Image 1 (cartoon, rainbow, N blue to C red):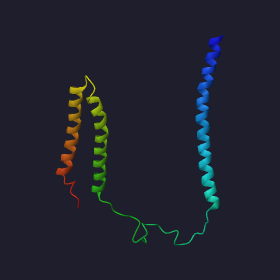
Image 2: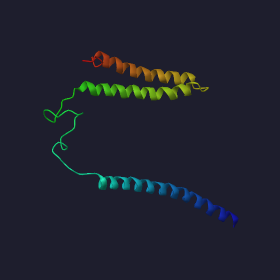
Image 3: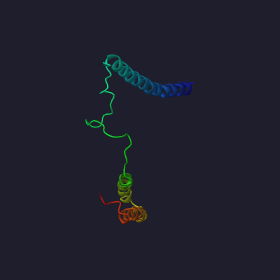
Image 4: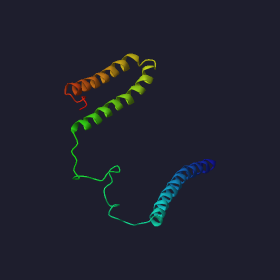
Length: 133
């Protein structure tokens, strides 16, 4: 009989934890909803033609709405992502490399990984992507 009471108590504690999380989530959603609703009710709404213009850093918009962007900017962003991922993988590698029994295999794997990155960087350099014009 005492085991049953103990099991029931565990279930109550288990669901109590979820009910607290659910209550905090509901309060958070209500808080955000009330903030947005009060902002909508309290703000002045006076539309003018100047307010309806597209804002471009304080400069009046000139020309059409289609802008051409050179592909090299996307390549720069891809190169940044590649090296950011490289940095993310290097930090855990350094901690695993220090652990006993993982030294040689981890070192070889990381040099293979860095080799792939070096080949990609060499390819981008040979294609002239890294030249800023």
